[in-house]
Amino acid sequence: MLQILDAEKSNPSITLGELQQRFESQFKVHPANQDFAFYNQNQFMTSLLAYLCMPSEKFYAELPETPIASLHSGWGTKELSFSGSLKSLVRHLRNSVSHGHVAITPELMFEFCNRDSAVFFDHKNLHHFCQALAYWCLTKDISLKNL
Image (cartoon, rainbow, N blue to C red):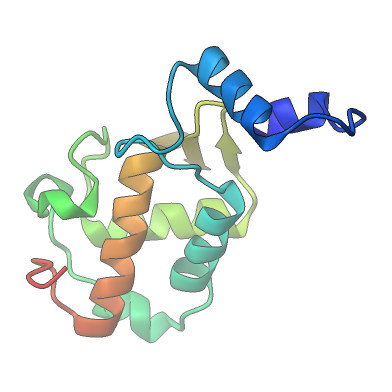
């Protein structure tokens, strides 16, 4: 949508309906579709900074060593090619975000690089991960019982 808005920024007569029609024809999706939502990369990065980089070492020490493969699907980690624990994944993401080693593609794939390895999340799974981590921070419930 930002691409379309940028292309039309000097057109004072364009209507919101025309912008929506252009979006639908270009991306073959209606913005009101249940499976579609606009994602803001800045919101993900802000959430990750808040939950990964700002907390003290006590937060990190409390993270469980639960293997990624055994986490509830609500964590959004089922498609990851990362074989470590939740604790090691959080450390990887924390280091990547803290040192600015995050790449975001136009398709909203997030690449978190740390040393010689990379972890990839699509926007939906990263959204689930951010929600699950925030929930865990508040409840310490790794099973996401009430999320």
